[in-house]
Image 1 (tube, one colour):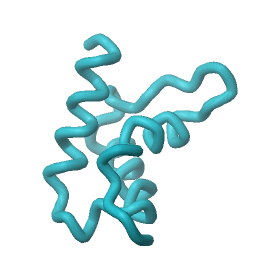
Image 2 (tube, one colour):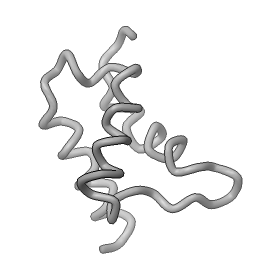
Image 3 (tube, rainbow, N blue to C red):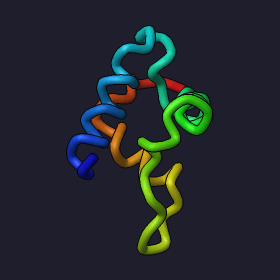
Image 4 (cartoon, rainbow, N blue to C red):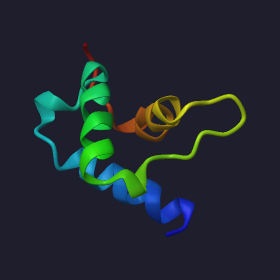
Length: 67
């Protein structure tokens, strides 16, 4: 799976969550879910960014306002 497909799949899975579970503080829970259920989708750490930071960047435009 290429990077664009992986990121698209991550975003689609994120958007399937209930809206109240798509806030900034829910990204860590989603990361844990990916680790357990879809580790193949986790971003690869490169250039000093860990996979969690990369996941945050991927989801930036899809995280609801608030905590």
